[in-house]
Length: 59
Figure (cartoon, rainbow, N blue to C red):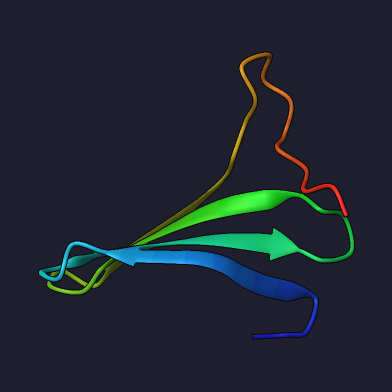
């Protein structure tokens, strides 16, 4: 992955689902990436605060 994007957290259910929190180092915006290793499906979405604004990691 490009140096702009960093995986800050990774979890797995040890079966088929893996999740990663990816941070855009340029903007601070965080995304949730979900991988299903059995079906080969992937989804990514920005993490949102309760008011609908994107979660931004503070440095």
